[in-house]
Amino acid sequence: MTITPLMPVYPRCGVRPVRGEGCYLIGEDGRRFLDFASGIAVNALGHGHPHLVKAIADQAATLMHVSNLYGSPQGEHLAQRLVDNSFADTVFFTNSGAEAVECAIKTARRFHYANGNPERFTLITFSNAFHGRTLGTISATNQPKMRDGFEPLLPGFKVVEFGDLDAVKAAMDETTAGFLIEPIQGEGGLKPATPAFLKALRDLADENGLMLILDEVQCGYGRTGTFFAHEQYGVTPDIMAVAKGIGSGFPLGACLATEHAAKGMVAGTHGSTYGGNPLAMAAGEAVLDVMLEPSFFTNVKAMGDRLRSSLEQLIPNHDDLFEEVRGMGLMLGLKLKVDCRAFVAHLRDNHGLLTVGAGENVVRILPPLIIDESHIAEAIEKISAAARDYEVAA
Image (cartoon, rainbow, N blue to C red; front, side, top):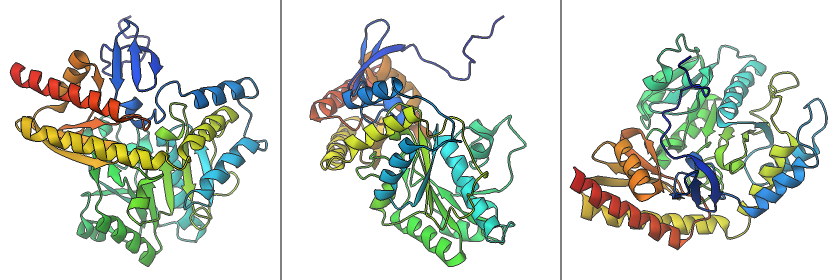
């Protein structure tokens, strides 16, 4: 037998973490890494946050799982807190971001079905998007690396150029159900939508009775300096998918919707065995406890501004390597003029800084949302040293 016990679908690197402490990961060999990847924007509170750890431990000793056939005081309470702090009127809890997007897709389709328009099932989506790895979510993107070998894909999606309003209008027809978009593309290269484009999609949805679905799996939950990224655009969605930071490492996601958008989601239309279990809800409550403290988002924005400014100051000294800084808040990207994957590996292996590659040769910089100025200074020092080494090696 030559296949590994873990199905070999990940090109895993040599880092093998066994412990985390705040903004650091420690490998099984004892080496410490400054974690500016955060499990790809997941570990919002870093590693081992005491409030989150205690909440999970206490709930695990009380009740971990019960069927959704029964009432859920834990789920009801967390859902109400999300409703109270968002545009939404109702919430469905999932175990992942891909599941949250699947629920969002189903909610949009079911809305039109409930309105007597079952022919409206097509979502207009955008180039270089990443919505997950299920058949439904890979059908919503045009990235060959996610689609190849999995055809036939699901019908009901039209992919147009990100930011091209004329292309959106040309793609609309009698089957259009709505739009599915990341306000800030993460895996696609840390590309924010312009406010004008997102507002135009909102207007088109309102004018044509369509659903605006935001995928805030990566950019939501404080990552940009506000609870949700769309708050900075002045645009309200009908349906939104969130995950990653919602559990700060515990598997959890959610689909949020207005009462109007969710009119078709009645008993029997959707479900999840594990979704909304008491253990996940305890994690979600603990994360909200921390994030809804008055100064939390203010500090994220301040640290994001400081990190961005520091990154931009590196560019003139290494302009043969670095091109620009992208993103918002603590969801930042450093666009390179060379292969970003090689530089990510160089940062990791030679300088102990963990980052993540993205499309368009962008290095994603996604630190825990609890970083302070000392972590920023350490990261900038490592990136600067790595740039000097890299240039010498080149």
